[in-house]
Image (cartoon, rainbow over all chains, first blue to last red; front, side, top):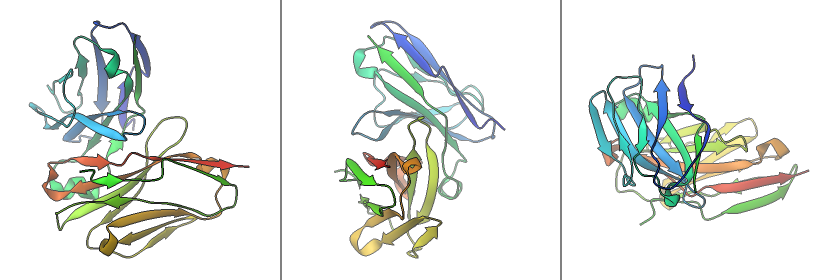
Length: 117
Length: 115
């Protein structure tokens, strides 16, 4: 059981380039989210999805796009990368719904370390 | 306003010392959940504990213990007889029932246990 798989683990981009970070989960979870982790700021949610076909903005969505065409995958796209987007990105999944979400901790992927020069 | 505050940015202790990591939260919800996660140097996030707002019993798991006090809005984490392998960043997080599946993290505390 792989859980949440993120690819790639590391990547370097040049300013203005585009890139898609991949996230896949095999637990049939409805809720998927992307976080970025920056020093001294903890993890901040970028975008999230409660089910296939439904996405919504988190607290720091600018510069990022997401899509949710099926239950398993939740790619995060940077259309025109900026140095301020240098960060570690985590994808997390859990069951949807208040009760389910609160009873099951979010399962995190291992992270993608992205550097933008 | 910061909803989850971990005032200790870095803590350094010597092995076998006890150490307490502080977490103070802010919420207006009556139903909420608090979490602690560990992030070792390898980078992954490891779930440690979940506590709901209706359960103020302290919990102990081996060398780990948690003290939840609603009166002071705190959910502190104590490691007894610390070990080098405990060196990591520890995050406290809050889930509020009205938040729309949002998990709010504190800034994290870097714990270094020296041999």
